[in-house]
View 1 (cartoon, rainbow, N blue to C red):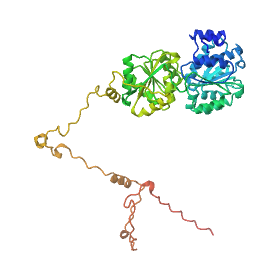
View 2: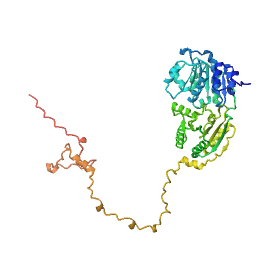
View 3: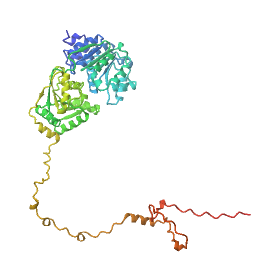
View 4: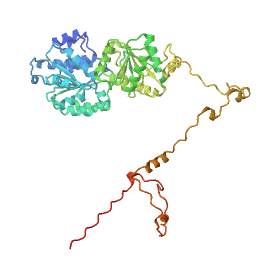
Length: 507
């Protein structure tokens, strides 16, 4: 029988007080099952859908186990890293550390988060001052290790959150490098949490975990039952019009819209802004400050639509998110589960709508095969697909119709046309309309005249008759390039001056 309140889990009063102030009274199934096992020191391989409370499921027992070592000493040596939590994305890392700090506010345990996209110098001072709980993304943690600001030799608890996403993003080599710096597996407690499992995840678990206990609160690779799912068959060029129709007809203020590429996210956000919707985009090319600002505005209800890539498919905890739209179907079926898991969190109801173009039918079939059930196909009410297609292609009504050239049939027959001599005036003679132009000077003649005026040109040789030379004329040769033209001064070989006469030898 599972616990029905946090008081039954054996947590210390400081943690219970923080949990109560956070508004939690009844533990979720994953929390009720995982917390006692982790507090007992066992390795855990936990599986549950996103939004079921996995973060508190491992954060609370970690704080319970580390609380006896809490102290207020300013010495960094008294605050070594004892718990390391790795997450795949910056947003998830920030969210996990916020939860840890919320639950630990009545203890003396220190925590911080390190992630890429910001200057590492801002993080070095905090990490070097000493923290017991470090939340990090793999790449930035390796940066800190190279700066020798983090020592992992005293880590007692190692948590790998969203392990399947780590695999998809190619972080497994980095994780293995980090694991080599930790104490041996037998001397530390290892926790692996993931919403989906695969063969690669099982191999990773075999290398990471030591006789783990498997905790699953739902069937593997299934979506939350509280999320209603449906799909619209719609052409690609009509998707934007359909999205605008849904937002306006339902008067929605928070719609999370997923696309596949970073360029597509930025382009769709710009187009929706032109359509009059308050929109922003979040993807990997945006710096961390812009991403956080967009998320905060969306959580506060200041954005109608947030366009995101799968970087936002994990770990975003948004209270009462009404609708998730798969504007473009994901290539990986498991990503569909994570996308729609942004709504219907903590037992609340949610809705997920997918726009399926003809070339995406195969992707929908793969998702249904993973879910082991069909996604209902419905027809959007009050939406004209033809109008949406015209809008995406850009209607010309605002600019006015393009004036078409009259067709051959629309022209008057040749027999009905006026004679040419009556419709066109006779062209006046050329000598009456234009003045006589001077002849254009040939550039070759001008160049040769310039050569001839060059004082360095050789003098013309006298003819044989004028010089009295009776020798036979030279043998005619074939004229070469430049024959009969002056030689430029730069190419002319100057004559060598005669040598002075030799002085007679003295007797």
